[in-house]
Image 1 (cartoon, helix red, strand yellow):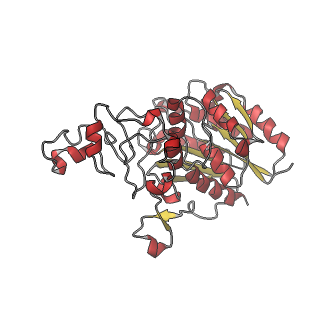
Image 2 (image 1 turned 90 degrees about the vertical axis):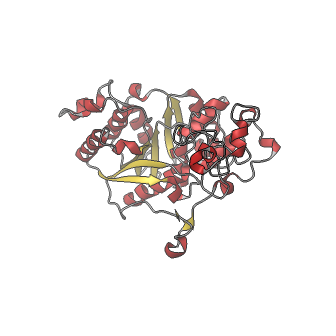
Length: 353
């Protein structure tokens, strides 16, 4: 077949980065995850992954040669590795402080970040995109990033660390993420191309205004999209939710906001308690496992429907998700927003051309 450039996906989840890769013109030849619902989701979207080898498994137990064999079978001119290791606590960070780096990244006690690095260093792709939470750069976790860099530099990669906000790439959601992008080529620019900005700045820089929640989820308000899950009416805080203006949270009902007979005390609750979307603003970060009164809620005083959450994450319209409602929420909430991932993969692809 000899394709120009293809991707091997690790920790694929519901396919956020995989779809991003397809959008960037880089077909995904291999996807894997340990969650069976995620695997069924990927298989259900044949129009994107019809030629992808999709298999379930824990990366700790999958040998690098499995991925190498898939690449050799397809014979691409170049290939990349994409993936975001699950955002688990990095309590094992101290373990990374070792001079025996190769042994360190293969030790089964280490985090899944190690497994990502193990595959990259073993199969030597032309480049990679690694995604994780921004707090990986926090001083308590910084040793992970520093060791990651040591390992990839030793393996011959140039790299960029990108602190990105999904808003700037056309995603209708405030969501900050960290990307480490590595290449055996040369970066053509300092950072991925941003497409959107604050509406007040757009006339000067020529970028598009941030996409709003109202724009993103238009078309899903009809009865045909109704879900039992969305009903908040009759619940403990439903009356309070109805009083919160669009774009605000529970703090609208406190003395801090000048609310008469305050119902809550400001800063005593999680910020996303009774958090409500405004149709005129981008969404806040959508959660993978929200509590019963954790937002963002729809401005119509209900929970968001699955296709609305998927639209906020910029999954393509009609993308199928498998599993029960809780599982679907988790899959969508854990995903890399597709348009954000697309910008990162295009940036890497450009360095390889």
